Length: 110
Length: 116
Image 1 (cartoon, rainbow over the protein chains, first blue to last red):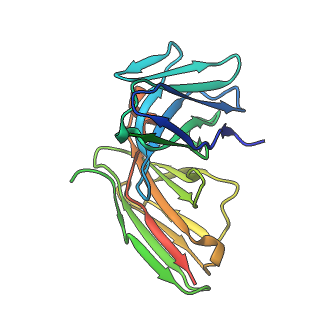
Image 2 (image 1 turned 180 degrees about the vertical axis):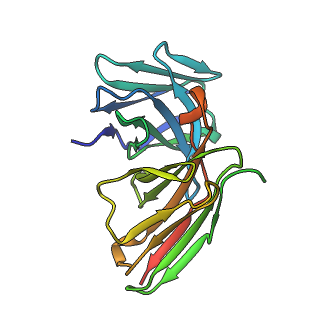
Protein backbone atom coordinates (compact mmCIF):
# COMPACT_ATOMS: atom_id res chain seq x y z
CA UNK A 1 0.00 0.00 0.00
CA UNK A 2 1.31 3.44 -0.87
CA UNK A 3 2.14 5.75 2.01
CA UNK A 4 0.05 8.54 0.53
CA UNK A 5 -2.80 8.32 -1.95
CA UNK A 6 -4.51 11.11 -3.83
CA UNK A 7 -7.13 11.26 -6.52
CA UNK A 8 -5.10 12.43 -9.55
CA UNK A 9 -8.08 14.24 -11.07
CA UNK A 10 -8.08 16.21 -13.25
CA UNK A 11 -10.45 18.64 -11.63
CA UNK A 12 -11.75 21.23 -14.06
CA UNK A 13 -13.74 23.93 -12.29
CA UNK A 14 -15.06 27.35 -13.29
CA UNK A 15 -13.68 30.51 -11.79
CA UNK A 16 -15.25 31.26 -8.45
CA UNK A 17 -16.03 27.65 -7.65
CA UNK A 18 -15.11 25.86 -4.45
CA UNK A 19 -13.08 22.70 -4.85
CA UNK A 20 -11.87 20.15 -2.32
CA UNK A 21 -9.08 17.60 -2.46
CA UNK A 22 -8.57 14.68 -0.13
CA UNK A 23 -5.51 12.65 0.56
CA UNK A 24 -5.20 9.48 2.66
CA UNK A 25 -2.09 8.26 4.41
CA UNK A 26 -1.17 4.84 5.74
CA UNK A 27 1.20 5.53 8.63
CA UNK A 28 -0.70 6.36 11.79
CA UNK A 29 2.56 7.57 13.36
CA UNK A 30 2.96 10.42 10.86
CA UNK A 31 3.13 13.76 12.65
CA UNK A 32 3.68 16.38 9.96
CA UNK A 33 1.37 17.09 7.06
CA UNK A 34 1.60 19.57 4.22
CA UNK A 35 0.09 20.69 0.97
CA UNK A 36 2.43 21.75 -1.82
CA UNK A 37 1.59 23.31 -5.13
CA UNK A 38 3.51 22.44 -8.28
CA UNK A 39 3.20 24.31 -11.55
CA UNK A 40 4.04 22.58 -14.80
CA UNK A 41 7.79 21.89 -15.08
CA UNK A 42 8.50 23.81 -11.87
CA UNK A 43 9.55 22.74 -8.41
CA UNK A 44 6.99 22.13 -5.64
CA UNK A 45 6.24 25.13 -3.47
CA UNK A 46 4.90 24.93 0.05
CA UNK A 47 1.27 25.98 0.16
CA UNK A 48 0.50 25.31 3.79
CA UNK A 49 1.21 23.08 6.72
CA UNK A 50 -1.73 21.15 8.11
CA UNK A 51 -2.29 21.33 11.85
CA UNK A 52 -4.45 19.11 14.01
CA UNK A 53 -6.88 21.93 14.66
CA UNK A 54 -7.16 22.77 10.98
CA UNK A 55 -5.88 25.99 9.52
CA UNK A 56 -6.90 28.62 7.05
CA UNK A 57 -4.90 30.96 4.85
CA UNK A 58 -7.08 33.27 2.83
CA UNK A 59 -9.10 31.18 0.40
CA UNK A 60 -7.35 27.96 1.42
CA UNK A 61 -8.39 25.73 4.30
CA UNK A 62 -6.58 22.57 5.33
CA UNK A 63 -7.88 19.94 7.71
CA UNK A 64 -6.51 16.81 9.28
CA UNK A 65 -8.54 13.81 10.37
CA UNK A 66 -6.25 11.51 12.33
CA UNK A 67 -8.91 8.92 13.06
CA UNK A 68 -9.56 8.34 9.39
CA UNK A 69 -6.02 9.21 8.34
CA UNK A 70 -6.77 11.79 5.73
CA UNK A 71 -6.01 15.40 5.06
CA UNK A 72 -8.03 17.77 2.95
CA UNK A 73 -7.56 21.03 1.13
CA UNK A 74 -10.44 23.34 0.33
CA UNK A 75 -10.03 26.18 -2.16
CA UNK A 76 -12.78 28.78 -2.19
CA UNK A 77 -13.46 31.32 -4.94
CA UNK A 78 -11.07 29.62 -7.37
CA UNK A 79 -8.87 31.84 -9.50
CA UNK A 80 -7.29 31.08 -12.85
CA UNK A 81 -3.93 31.30 -11.09
CA UNK A 82 -4.89 28.37 -8.84
CA UNK A 83 -4.45 26.02 -11.81
CA UNK A 84 -1.66 23.66 -10.77
CA UNK A 85 -1.00 20.23 -9.31
CA UNK A 86 -1.57 19.96 -5.57
CA UNK A 87 0.58 17.48 -3.68
CA UNK A 88 -0.10 16.22 -0.21
CA UNK A 89 2.87 15.25 1.95
CA UNK A 90 3.23 13.30 5.17
CA UNK A 91 6.31 12.32 7.09
CA UNK A 92 7.51 8.96 8.30
CA UNK A 93 7.50 7.83 11.92
CA UNK A 94 11.17 8.81 12.13
CA UNK A 95 10.11 12.27 11.07
CA UNK A 96 12.77 12.73 8.45
CA UNK A 97 11.41 10.89 5.42
CA UNK A 98 8.62 12.60 3.54
CA UNK A 99 6.12 10.91 1.29
CA UNK A 100 4.44 12.81 -1.49
CA UNK A 101 1.22 11.86 -3.16
CA UNK A 102 1.08 11.68 -6.94
CA UNK A 103 -0.71 15.03 -6.97
CA UNK A 104 -4.15 16.24 -7.97
CA UNK A 105 -4.39 18.34 -11.10
CA UNK A 106 -6.61 21.41 -10.98
CA UNK A 107 -7.57 23.56 -13.94
CA UNK A 108 -9.68 26.65 -13.29
CA UNK A 109 -11.63 27.61 -16.38
CA UNK A 110 -12.65 31.20 -17.21
CA UNK B 1 18.48 35.12 -4.86
CA UNK B 2 18.66 33.40 -1.47
CA UNK B 3 16.68 30.30 -2.40
CA UNK B 4 17.88 26.75 -2.98
CA UNK B 5 20.02 26.45 -6.08
CA UNK B 6 20.93 23.39 -8.11
CA UNK B 7 23.51 22.81 -10.79
CA UNK B 8 23.36 21.84 -13.57
CA UNK B 9 19.75 22.47 -14.53
CA UNK B 10 19.89 19.93 -17.32
CA UNK B 11 22.16 16.96 -17.94
CA UNK B 12 22.17 14.57 -20.85
CA UNK B 13 24.41 11.57 -20.49
CA UNK B 14 24.95 8.22 -22.11
CA UNK B 15 24.06 5.02 -20.33
CA UNK B 16 26.90 3.79 -18.19
CA UNK B 17 28.38 7.20 -17.48
CA UNK B 18 28.62 8.74 -14.03
CA UNK B 19 26.93 12.04 -13.22
CA UNK B 20 27.13 14.38 -10.25
CA UNK B 21 24.66 17.06 -9.24
CA UNK B 22 25.12 19.88 -6.77
CA UNK B 23 22.69 21.52 -4.38
CA UNK B 24 23.23 24.72 -2.40
CA UNK B 25 20.58 25.07 0.30
CA UNK B 26 19.27 28.25 1.87
CA UNK B 27 22.18 29.44 3.99
CA UNK B 28 20.67 29.08 7.47
CA UNK B 29 19.03 25.73 6.72
CA UNK B 30 20.88 22.74 8.15
CA UNK B 31 18.45 20.11 6.86
CA UNK B 32 18.83 18.98 3.27
CA UNK B 33 16.83 16.46 1.24
CA UNK B 34 17.17 14.85 -2.17
CA UNK B 35 14.19 13.64 -4.17
CA UNK B 36 13.58 12.17 -7.59
CA UNK B 37 10.49 12.95 -9.62
CA UNK B 38 9.26 11.32 -12.81
CA UNK B 39 6.42 12.46 -15.02
CA UNK B 40 3.02 12.13 -13.42
CA UNK B 41 4.42 11.20 -10.02
CA UNK B 42 5.11 13.10 -6.86
CA UNK B 43 8.67 13.55 -5.63
CA UNK B 44 10.18 10.35 -4.22
CA UNK B 45 12.39 10.69 -1.15
CA UNK B 46 16.00 9.64 -1.67
CA UNK B 47 18.02 10.84 1.31
CA UNK B 48 18.23 13.34 4.17
CA UNK B 49 21.12 15.20 5.78
CA UNK B 50 21.24 17.08 9.01
CA UNK B 51 24.35 19.18 8.80
CA UNK B 52 26.98 16.83 7.37
CA UNK B 53 25.39 13.64 8.69
CA UNK B 54 23.34 11.49 6.32
CA UNK B 55 20.58 10.36 8.68
CA UNK B 56 18.04 8.79 6.35
CA UNK B 57 18.32 6.92 3.10
CA UNK B 58 15.48 5.41 1.14
CA UNK B 59 15.57 1.64 1.03
CA UNK B 60 14.71 2.02 -2.63
CA UNK B 61 17.98 3.84 -3.26
CA UNK B 62 20.28 1.75 -5.41
CA UNK B 63 23.92 1.42 -4.37
CA UNK B 64 24.76 3.26 -7.59
CA UNK B 65 23.50 6.42 -5.86
CA UNK B 66 25.60 8.23 -3.29
CA UNK B 67 25.20 11.60 -1.65
CA UNK B 68 27.53 13.72 0.41
CA UNK B 69 27.43 16.93 2.36
CA UNK B 70 31.02 17.22 3.54
CA UNK B 71 30.92 20.57 5.33
CA UNK B 72 27.26 20.73 6.14
CA UNK B 73 26.59 23.32 3.46
CA UNK B 74 26.26 22.24 -0.19
CA UNK B 75 25.51 18.65 -1.12
CA UNK B 76 26.31 16.44 -4.09
CA UNK B 77 24.38 13.49 -5.49
CA UNK B 78 26.30 11.08 -7.68
CA UNK B 79 24.82 8.38 -9.86
CA UNK B 80 27.26 5.79 -11.12
CA UNK B 81 26.76 3.67 -14.23
CA UNK B 82 23.61 5.50 -15.20
CA UNK B 83 20.67 3.58 -16.63
CA UNK B 84 17.79 4.82 -18.74
CA UNK B 85 15.50 4.35 -15.76
CA UNK B 86 17.48 7.03 -13.93
CA UNK B 87 16.05 9.68 -16.25
CA UNK B 88 14.09 11.99 -13.98
CA UNK B 89 14.07 15.36 -12.29
CA UNK B 90 16.33 15.39 -9.24
CA UNK B 91 15.13 17.86 -6.65
CA UNK B 92 16.90 19.19 -3.62
CA UNK B 93 15.12 20.82 -0.69
CA UNK B 94 16.22 22.40 2.55
CA UNK B 95 14.51 23.33 5.78
CA UNK B 96 15.02 25.38 8.88
CA UNK B 97 17.08 23.94 11.74
CA UNK B 98 14.59 23.86 14.55
CA UNK B 99 11.07 24.22 15.70
CA UNK B 100 7.80 23.89 13.91
CA UNK B 101 9.32 25.24 10.71
CA UNK B 102 11.94 22.53 10.57
CA UNK B 103 9.81 20.27 8.42
CA UNK B 104 8.71 22.92 5.93
CA UNK B 105 10.85 22.24 2.90
CA UNK B 106 11.90 24.68 0.20
CA UNK B 107 12.82 23.20 -3.13
CA UNK B 108 15.39 24.11 -5.70
CA UNK B 109 14.55 24.22 -9.41
CA UNK B 110 15.84 20.69 -9.95
CA UNK B 111 18.29 18.99 -12.29
CA UNK B 112 16.66 17.23 -15.21
CA UNK B 113 18.63 14.12 -16.14
CA UNK B 114 18.20 12.38 -19.46
CA UNK B 115 20.04 9.10 -19.97
CA UNK B 116 20.30 8.06 -23.61
